[in-house]
Structure formats: C-alpha cells, structure tokens
Image 1: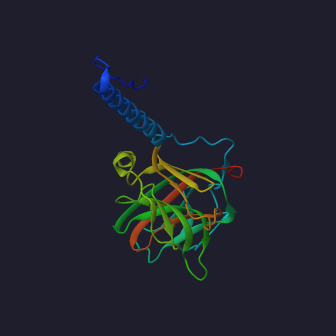
Image 2: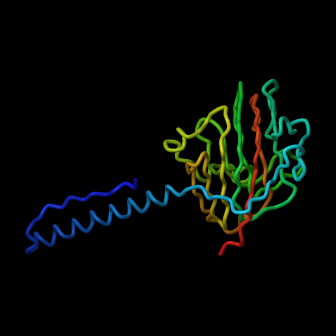
Image 3: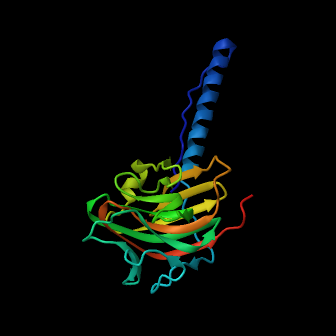
Length: 241
C-alpha cells in the first residue's frame, strides 16, 4: 500500500490583509511539503536491475584480473583476498585487465576479520599506481564503522567524496556475512546500494577527473581480514549525454 499524505485545512475567511497572509502561509506549507516528498522519493531510488549482464568472474580462475598471487586466489568458487591468520601489511588490490567507463555492477561481497582495521571496497574508474600495490581512483567502500556504501577517492584526493547515510543503510548491512553491492557509474554520477538500500549518490564536480578506468577489489592493510567476492556481473551503459 502506498503511503498517503493527508493535509487538513480548516475554513477561514479569505478577506483583506489577514486572508491574504493566510493564503501565503498555506502556499508556503504546500510547497515545502511537495519539496520534502519529492526529495524523499528521489532519495529512495531503487537499485537498477541488470539487462543482459555479463559475468566478470568465471568461478574457477582469475582470468581478466591481475594481482599479487600471495594475496589473491580462488577458493570454493570465490575470489578471495587476505588472511584471518596473518596481518595484511599494506593495501592490496585485484585489478581488472581492461578499462570500463559507464556501467552498472552487481556483486556479492563478504568481509570477515579478527584483528585490526577490517575494511574492503570496490574500485571503479581507477588505475594502478606505478611501483606500488595501490590503485588510484574511486572506491565504493565497505567496512566498519561507517564506510559502507561511501565513495572514497583512493590514492588521489585521499578523502571521502560522499558519505553514506548509515542511519538508513546500517540496519541493512549483514556483518561478517554476504551482502549484495550494486554500483552505477554513469557520466559524472556514481550511486551505490547495499542489499537494496541506497548508500550514497555522488556527482563529480571536477571535469578533469577521468571517468574511465579499471575495476578492483581491495583488502585494506593493517588487519587480519579476509574478503570474498562472487557473482560479479556488469552491464555496460552507452556514453552519458
């Protein structure tokens, strides 16, 4: 059932200056309610469904991806990175071997950890940093306490570009378990969803920032952390207008 907005208005005489003032106040109230409802509808945008999606992981090998084989492997049909027994010393990334521009990606991710900073994320429109384990570019973040669904600029501006609304998103997160992550990058706009709940909606204001690049999976340094990813599907979108 759709929610209904009920507005009760008492009759009053609409004469003279007093009546005009009441009309103006009522007009402002209706306008404010309209803006509030419109904003709520936009903020509650649903995660897009993939049309003719293509798999980016064959379930048995890292074909189409590259990374340190001491960190990244395939276990039980899942891309697996990091360790629950040994500290991950530095940020490590498994990167796609080709670039992507506009797309919708849907994947399942599970992050577990026992000690230290337990964090992961999915890189988009990124590139390898020469002579480093790092990637530079947008990261759709994933981890405690409030990184889930946020857009962070990894090894470039090194800051959160758009935080997520954890008051809304937090209850939907399945900690230490599987979560469905959806990312849409279309032109300068990047939107994230986790388990069907919108994380953030970011529009890049700087036209000099590249809107293409590689994809990547991160396991963050400084913790005994294990990230597992499966069912990675992509739908490439036409050039943004």
